[in-house]
Every structure is written in structure tokens, then in C-alpha cells.
Image (cartoon, rainbow, N blue to C red; front, top):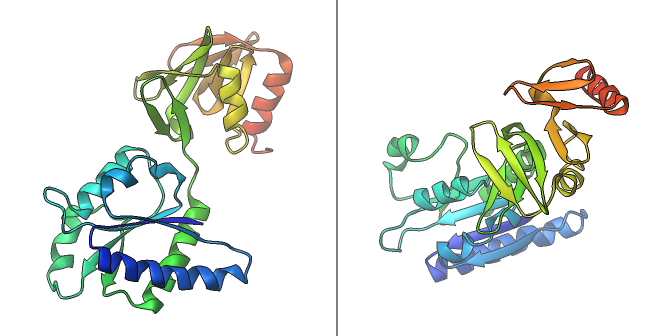
Length: 240
């Protein structure tokens, strides 16, 4: 497990690091290593957030920024990992307003941190991570998007790149062809097939198959060979 701490109070951040290091030491003997990266500002964290399995956020001393804004930025970047927000225990009204500020899946820890509560949070991180479907990275020339498997309808190779059509109507040009994308994502996502060498489709968006052609729900259709049709049938029957 790879955890990121982002705390703009250096003294409190160092204390959190010490407590997490103790948790990491406990996990070594069980063969479950835990790695910790520490950030003093959100800008540095937001450069490469997708590498982390969980986040602990406490931003209260940076002008124009707070923990809720950092959490929102992480989600907009495609982060689906659990996020734990630190709150001051002396703020008796914190939870009266938290429901309108933070999404329901947010975890919370009171500061000063208590070792037993931190330990329970680590266990929650692990449980949530096991249930989280990995995001798919779609890297373009100027930006990288992270999407869920259900957002991709199909992709078509266009020269050395591919055009990916998403369920919300967006079309993204990525820096690899459809076959390379297929090789990257089928390790963890088994609902994708390639009816031809230049086309990748999401089986869940197949409307019907007729005369050797796959017809998608968005009106597109592609020819398909029998071996791919057998895979599609097995997937739809729940045999894969």
C-alpha cells in the first residue's frame, strides 16, 4: 500500500509521519509493505496522485485553499482511492457542516492523531482498496485522463494514435493505438475485445450482433470474427 500525507503544518506532518512509520513497521512482519510519501503543499501532491492507494489530507494554513478543495481536485483528476481528512478535535461543530462540504465516502481522523484510530483507518484503506476498480489511464499529447471501464464505449486506431469514444460523448485522442490500449487494460478489465486489429469495444455497450457484425448502443457497427463472438458470448453468460 502506498499512502500520501499532505499537511501544510510541518510539525503536525512530522508527527503523522512518525505514527504512520510505526504502522508500516507492524505490517512488514505480515508481508504487507506500506510506503509513505509526505507533502507540505497540495500543488506537489496533485502532480502525480494516481500512484497512491490512499490519502491523508490536512490543509488549513494555506491561503485560499483547504482540505475540501484538495479532495475535490483529486477526484477531478480521476482518483478513486480512499481519502481521509484530518479535522481539529476542538472544533465541536465540524461534523455539523461536513455533510455539505465533503462527499459521503470521505473518511475522517481527529487531530491530534490517536494511534488506535490511525490503525483502524489503515485497515479501512485496505478494505476499500480491495473493492476499488482500477482506473484506466488515457494519456494524450497534452493531458492525461483517468476513466472507469464503464466510461469507454470503443476506440479506433488512427495512424499511430487512437480515438477513444466515451459514454458522455467525449472523444479523446491518446498516444497509443487501439491494440496497445487493449494490451494495457485487459489485464484487469475483461469486458474489452478487438473485433478487428484497429477496433477495441466494450462488450457492455453491444446492442446486438447480426450477420457477423457487432452493433453498439451508440449506433456504430463493426465486423467481427467467430473467435471474438465466442468470447463475447462467454462473457455475457458470466463464464469469464
